[in-house]
Length: 541
Image (cartoon, rainbow, N blue to C red; front, side):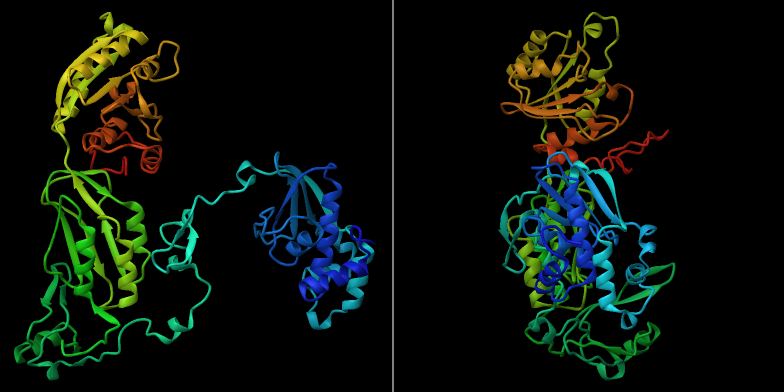
């Protein structure tokens, strides 16, 4: 039985030249590909998803224009010998698979496919003959629709140079290339010949260390009571220290007369270099490392801001770490906010250089002070304007603004009228407001015209909608240099909403982007606890 335009023997030879030998799976795959093609309407531009990475992808590449190189064929390795061929625009197509009931009608093929006979005991010529005779008789076809996420080709956003290795890579892979993230399937000869864990230094018995200085801090732990350095780096060990070291379980120690070589850097030296590059405005840190670690504290009250991509890139480098408090959280002066350390006693110069490279281009974190925002509170709603409902928005918003150090410059209540709302916004700007918080009228009801009125007043850089509950209908934007925050009605009924997440950011001068808003999704679901402990809870984190 032919395989498309080829006789079985012709395709067998093509398979041998392409694959290295005429694998039975490739020959079977040829029949499967041709069967799928027969079900596609004439002229259809199709793509293929293959569910096995063995042999079947080669059959697709030999008999169609689809390949991994042009991305018209993708391998989603589900471990099943099947392929789906589909219209590249609609996703409609067919799936061809080996039917385990039908294949039993061909015992020689079934024994091979299900590996019931050892390879050494198989009759290859007989197997080829049976494959030729059966054709696609033991396969089945089903109609399928491919989900939208598999349609179309993802474009590379940009090509950059990996700061760790210096090679080009798609920047949408992350802050550094995937090879430097630990996914490289090889070890270079330079890496094989280099020491991988630590320099070649030797510890000495504690008795022989008397009169020498300790190379590193040595910790004493009393379970349930204390943990801390019993001996600091540089401490000159005395006879009296020998007993204490033995009590700590130390028979050998490192002293500072060892020479690790120029390829290694002591933990304290390394972490000093990291700390100087990490700390931005409003951040203080200890001058002297302890056990290769430095802690950071807030030098002022404000909003703690972290460069998340840089933090991730730094932590992808071996032998280093940095942990921080949640970004975009309010911190008080003197409170600890982060810590970094070199993990081994000595870090290789190579990893140190990579880590330092990750910290280029500005600080890793900073504390931004909250400005004394001149705030206008604008309540929209005809029922409130007419006095049918008592306004409670102004007291709520005013209290939260004052709690962050801002001041209320102007307040107003206007009906659900575009011209009235836009006019009130302009009056607040004329009064000197640099932040306008407007409430209600942000949904899709016909009378909810607040968004339209803000547009009339010149609103730009709009982000409407937040993955936060309560607070999905939040709006942020600006009118010239004036920040605008639209607060949905849920702020009347819940103590903590998206308002509490957005207001500090705006008062710290942050520009909120759609990506910033999207990052709130994880942790953006309030549990509505009977006793609210925000911000000491997972909400917004």
